[in-house]
Structure formats: structure tokens, C-alpha cells
Amino acid sequence: MLINKPADVASSEITPRRAYLSRRAFMAGAAIAGGSLLAGRRLLEMASPADVVRAGAKLSTVKGPFGTDEKLTPYKDVTTYNNFYEFSTDKGEPAQLAKDFRTRPWQVKVEGLVQKPRAFDIDDILKLAPLEDRVYRHRCVEGWSMVIPWVGYPLSTLLKQVQPLGKAKYVEFTTILDPKQMPGQRMRILDWPYIEGLRMDEAMHPLAILCVGLYGEALPNQDGAPVRIVLPWKYGFKSAKSIVRIRLVEQQPINTWNQAAPDEYGFYSNVNPDVDHPRWSQKTERRIDGSGFFASIRKIPTRPFNGYGDQVAQLYAGMDLRKYF
Ligand SMILES: Nc1nc2c(c(=O)[nH]1)N[C@H]1C(S)=C(S)[C@@H](COP(=O)(O)O)O[C@H]1N2
Ligand SMILES: [Mo]
Image (cartoon, rainbow, N blue to C red; front, side):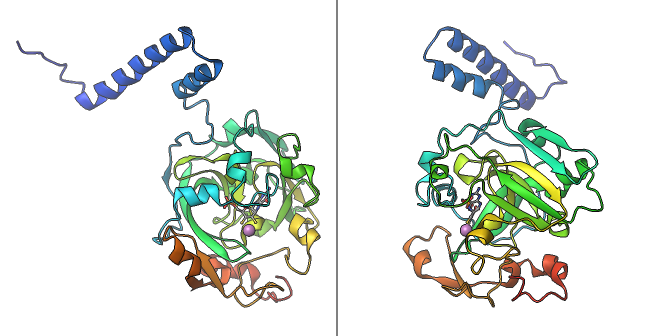
């Protein structure tokens, strides 16, 4: 016997929809059938990926600009070698210690010298603009580097929403303060909460992104979930994680690392091989690219502005970059 399928529906359309519907029916049944509360929650999360974007959830993205074809740092290294002092000063520990960090509900207040101050819900931030894959070099002031496929969109997109006033000269970013959830904040390692800042023109530059994911997925907690800043031409510490406030101000913000050690960490902190850290050279870097032991000994030259000079050098025209390091 011949089974005719309707001519106007391609088989490629039928299968996913059918699979989707039957998966939903199955899950509803499974949820009712019981199981642990946790299993129920897991099923719920799978049932509505569009509404519930938790760490690791797939994001739908478009290809963004400024790509590089350098070898990507493996996902494993991006998510197990982290500087996130709110959790631990040991790079191996945030992956474990941030496991249960709560990223919902989450708001980012955007306020200060703006026409329309507003608290953005994280799920609105995710929908504000198309999410772009942006493969950036990531250079830590400590001398290691990675190549990470971030997911986000220009920070300027968010800032334009609140209509900055002409008086606004700088932007300040504040990380969440929650010592109950963040064991590092129970210790006086830094003056919490973590604060960073940029000049207004730096913040509006198309390279600067508001980042919500990596490797096509919602940000893992240890990488700054649910939302962080990424500034590829600056040392990593300028890119504040897990932010809850963006404030537009007239005076240059006092950023946490500059306050902790002003001789070592400047306000600008543009990647610059010609300005050494007082305790080590910045001429070379150790690229973490999955080649294991060999990567740990192989040094590559560090480039001015981390290789983004063509895009950003003009922001600093006429400035003495040794003085404004
Ligand atoms: N709130 C907060 N943001 C932070 C840090 C931090 O300790 N706390 N570390 C910074 C440093 S030094 C670096 S190199 C990057 C590391 O980001 P990654 O772990 O996603 O690679 O985050 C930056 N942002
Ligand atoms: Mo860093």
C-alpha cells in the first residue's frame, strides 16, 4: 500500500515538529508520574528553552564581526581555568563553587546620567538584540591568553536604550554583592563589590560587548553568568562578571584592581607589551589552546591592544600610554 504525504508539507518540517510535540507530551507525563522535584525541574527547563535560559542552554545566534581564525581555547579550559575572586582565588575552584549560583531572577539597573533609567530583566536583555558569536582573544594581565567564542551584542545597544546625557563621561560596572552565595566575598581579598569602569567612548565602541554566553550556550556560572562585559583589547580584569548595575557618571570610576594596587593596575589597562607589570614583563603570553604541556611552555608575542589596534588605537590618540596604563 502506498502512503501519500501531503505535497505541501516537506518531510523535514514534519519530523522536528512531531518530535517536539511528542517530547513535550512525554515530559508532561513524566513530570506527573513523579520522580524527584529536581527531575521535574530539569524536565521543565527542557520543555521551554526559550523562556528558561540557564547556564549551558543553547542560544540561537548569528555570526558576529571581528572574527579570528586562531585556534579556539577548548571549552574545558574556558570553564575550568577562571579568575573569579568572588568564588575563589584558585582558578580551578570557581567551576565547582559557582555550580549552584542563582542567576534567576536577575536584573541589571542602568542608571546615573541618563534620560531614561531602567532596570532590565535578564530575559529582556537576552531579547534586546540578535545574539552574535564573537570570537575574541582574551588576555589576562597575569600573562596567559585564550581565544573564546563569546555570545553577545554591542554594549552600546543597551546604553542607547537609556539615552545617555551629554554630561556622562564614564561608565561604571558593578558585580553582584552576595556573600551568602559567594564564598570569596566573605573574605577581604578585595573591596567588594567588584567595580570596573570605562570611558564613554570605549563603552560605545563596537568591540565592547555585553556577553551572555560562550560556545553557543548561556554563560557557565564561573564565566560570569548571567551577564558580563567583554573588552578584548584590555586586560581581562576590566571585563566584570555577573553584573547588576551599570551607572553613567561624570567622574572616572574607582575600579577595584586600581584601588587594590594602583601601581600595578591602571584605569585603562589596554593590553600593551611595552609597559611591563612592575613584577613581570608583558611582552609575551602563554596561549591556552589545547596543546597541553607544550602550550604551558610556548610563549607567543603579545600585541598592542591585544591585536585590535586597527579598531581602537584612535581612541587613545595623543595620550601617553605609559602614564595612562
Ligand atoms: N566580578 C569579577 N569579574 C572578573 C574577575 C573577578 O574576579 N570578579 N576576574 C577578571 C579577570 S582577572 C579575568 S582574566 C576575567 C576572566 O574571565 P574568564 O574566567 O571567563 O576567562 O574575568 C575578569 N572579571
Ligand atoms: Mo585576569
